[in-house]
Length: 169
Image (cartoon, rainbow, N blue to C red; front, top):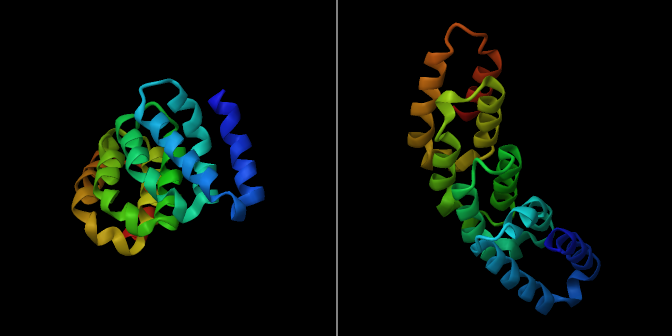
């Protein structure tokens, strides 16, 4: 039911955004409860939550702590590239509210970085580069695993990784 209702509510919000503030507030409260639950509904709605971020924009801010908890706790249960895109949108629309969670998020990104294949490592580095001016707050978290990864893969062609790393440095 939740996997069907979220896209429908998303369309309603897009169509009637200016006249449904109370509905949006209620919607945020309900999603917060779902994100806090241990229910499998959390998994089904999480795939739609990226769209919700771009629709609610700054009104998404109250959901950030709960979404961050899901990302950190369930990092290996979801498509990590989708989770990174969600982080990108939260940074874009709710930067001031989100930036305090950046060290936790980046620690999650980097938790298994040394074992990552080149495609995954490059995706993470590309996403980290999107943090722009906030990189100075997390450089102490990202560089040790990056350097370890490079040392482990020194005999491989690292052109793509070095290009992504150049965007960070």
